[in-house]
Length: 181
Image (cartoon, rainbow, N blue to C red; front, side):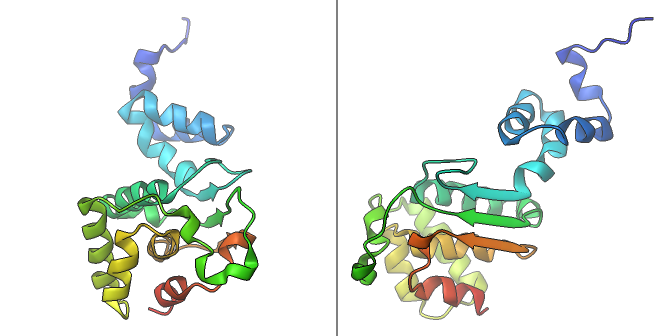
C-alpha cells in the first residue's frame, strides 16, 4: 500500500507529526505552513511565537509602529501566544543621531493611531496599572514607537532574552514604567 499524503490529508495528520516537520523549518516556512490549513496553525504557534526578531537581520526586516500595533492586538486577542515568547530582538535599519535624545524615536511616528489602536493601548495601560496614564494616552495617539514597544514587551511574561538595537537603547520612560509593574 502506498502511504502518500496530499494537501487534503494535512488537517488529519497528528499534532506530533506537524511539530516534527516544523522543527526543521525556518521562520518563513513555518509561517507559510501555518497559513495552508487551520489544522496546521496550532502546531505552528510554538515556533512562530517562540522568538520575535524585528530588524535588518530579523524575520520582519522593515517594521513600523503599525507592525507593533497589529502584533499587540493579536496578542491581546490570543494571550496564550504571548506566553510562548522566549526571545525578543528589536532593531531598526536606521542610524540614530544620539545628540538628539529627546527626539530619538519621534522619527518613526506614522501619524495618529486609529481609534481602535488608541483604545487598545489605553486599555492595556489601565490593565497594567501604569503610572501617568494621560502621558501614555498622548504618546500612544501620536504613535511614537517607545510606548507601543513598552506595551508589547509587557505582554511577554515568559520572555527570557531581550535584545534592543542601539537606536532603541536611549532613555525610555515608557519602557521603564512597563517593566516596573
